[in-house]
Every structure is written in C-alpha cells, then in structure tokens.
Image (cartoon, rainbow, N blue to C red; front, top):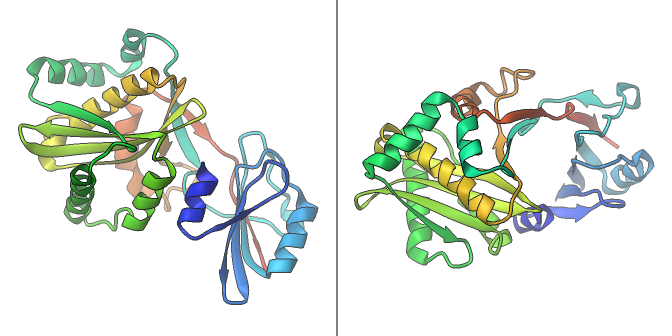
Length: 270
C-alpha cells in the first residue's frame, strides 16, 4: 500500500525480496531510500547505486534490522519519522480509556457529556466532494494560523487515492462550524493517525481529543489491533524535531508505547 502511495507522488519502486527501495531520477543522477527492510542486501544495493548513479542513498532500518557499518561508507543522518508511538487496542474500550491520562479521560467524558461537538465519520471511498473541499479548507486555515507550510495537497490527494478503500476521515463540528478533522489509514491491522487539523475553537473545546478517541473506537470496529500515532519528537535529534514537541505532548496524554527505530544512515555517491 505504501509503495502505491509513493508511486502516486512520483517515486519508482524496486528492491530485492520483500524490501522496497524508492528512487527518483534527477537528470543523470538518482536519489534513493530503502525503507524498513527486514534485511539489507548490500551487494544488490551496491549494484543499484552503480547502475542508477545514486547521489544519495538513505537506509531507514526496521526495528530488528541492524544498520550498515560506517566502515562501508554509511553515516548516521537524522530523518523524519524515526520515532513513533503505539496503543494496543485489542482490549475493551473501557480498558483503553482507563489507560489514558486522567486529564485526557476527563476531557473525553466531559466533552461527551456536554454534547456540544458532533463527529461525522466517512470512509475515503464514500467521501463527498464537499467533504474533501472542507478538509482541504481546514488544512489551509490551520497552516496559515500556525505559519507552517502544511501538507502538499498533491500528497494528501495521493494518500486518499492510495487508501481509498482503507481509510476514514473524521470531521468534528461545533454547531455548523467545522472545528477539526482527522485522517486515518488502515493497513494489516494497524490504524495510523496520518493528518489532523483544528481551529482555535476546536482546540478550546478539545476536538482533537474527541476525534482521536472516536478514531480509536472506529479502528477497533475495523478489526485493528494497533493504533499508530505516527511520527513524534525524537530526543536523539532535538534540533530537527524541535517543532514536533507540541503535538508529541498531546499524543503522550494517551499513554502510548514509544517505539524508536535504529538511526537512518546515508551513503553518498556510487
């Protein structure tokens, strides 16, 4: 599924065995990245780099994949999504709720009791044009408010296309006003928190918290065992991840298990 997404945004896909190496050509040169392989075939990789004139080759190891040695010309390079956090959602909804911080449990139950927010969930396959337009408009307003670039619309389009049958969009309304949204994608029993946006009113009324709880409940209904919060702040690379501390703090209130991948390595030239 991830390979389909990468192809949608212009990457080529190759690789030995069950590994996926993604690459793009820049004139006579190539940039490449090998993502979460179960094993690393260095001979195959050497041949690929030579054949395609790879300017940069990144290796993002899996959890049990030892990174290649610096003696082979690889150096550690900070890279996005080197750390994530997971919630086991196989238990009952009550046991999952009880595992959250006291403040988060309170915000969820209080918001549900006040009944001032309404969540509408739609699968990506049945999402209307109006809903998609509203999602993008909320993204743009969120990015302007926070003075960030945000997600390229081409990327979000590719995600929605690649996961058209395996994803949901959750919308949070306060009256008629859209105050928050959350995009979730499913793959092999894992629900991934992909993109979330909210207005000031949404943050004030804990829309992101209620959206996340709703997404966890829906993930259970879809048969998922794991809820993956996606990328979080990695203390190994504080300078690179400085701006991630805010949403990492929010995610931490759900008391997930933090998972850190081995360092990404980079090899220059071929």
